[in-house]
Length: 409
View 1 (tube, rainbow, N blue to C red):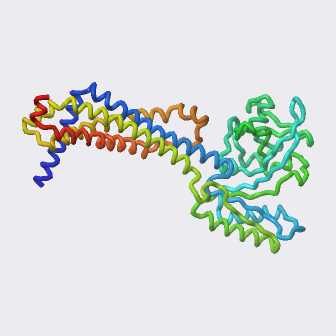
View 2 (view 1 turned 180 degrees about the horizontal axis):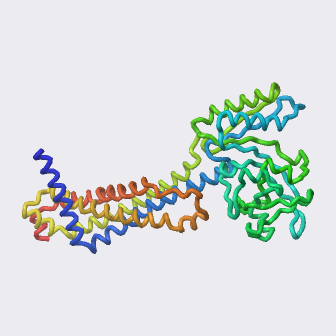
View 3 (view 1 turned 45 degrees about the vertical axis):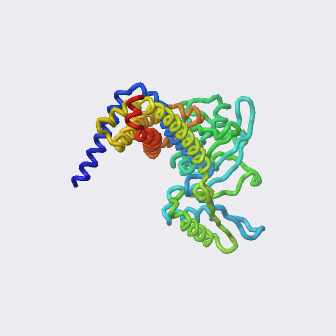
């Protein structure tokens, strides 16, 4: 117990001595630690911005393929001359979903219709969906709102257009209840929302609820309309079991000669991490930054120790042991880099939470991730380790200084 107390007292006194040396040599310390603070700031900023970029990539993938675990089903006839009864499939699908208490599911069909604009008629793609589709695919609404269950019962059918259609209509405010005129049927659909364009190459398109589509009065050539697919979003741990159970139940309800198969298309089903490349690039940049910061600190610390040879010799003459000198020089570097690490992490948090990363990336995630705690921990630990490594060589140099030579220096 006495030995432990002596050891702890030695550590505490060494830390106090190291902190006092930092206070005495403030100018030198600031010059030597600026590089470390910048390196730690860059390291944690890269990790934090990398987490933001990864989240953004996930959301882009989820808009296209759905959130994990998204399962898509397709109904078909095994005989090439057979015909699928869409109403029977819908009924079996709805019953199976209710049995397994699946809350997020949607039928998806593609069609087209001619839209009347002020400058003429132009075709637009129609995506027939159900209300949960917006949550399942992270549909971004830039103005107005997404569908609700009541929209399927409107006398004037509701639609959500993309920004391309909205721009062509003159970007009318949603408060004016703008309409979309269908040239073939003469029906005016009420625009209740505007979805963000996925890319600059997007064409004119609109979302329509499956149950509201007949009210549009659009007569679509079967050759120009896709077969309906059926999607559901379920917990990943239940995905395989639900996919098999629902496939079998719907197939049994449709009868012999029919098929109903499901598959996963979301990134969670991929055999490899789709964001591995991003993580490796971020880690590589972070390591390079840290190594550069460590090298600069080693050089500055070595030069500093050489200028303190006389001081070290005087301390040795007053009874300071080699171990005490070693730990004093080492801890001076460690304490300094620890403080620099805290400063660097603080600046990094301010940078990552600012609008700057979104401006550089070009967009920001819907679900903005919090600053990664592991990035802050890694930054401070990295700064401490760098301080220990950078102080090791100078500390060994200080221990090897001979007293008589140091006094004559």
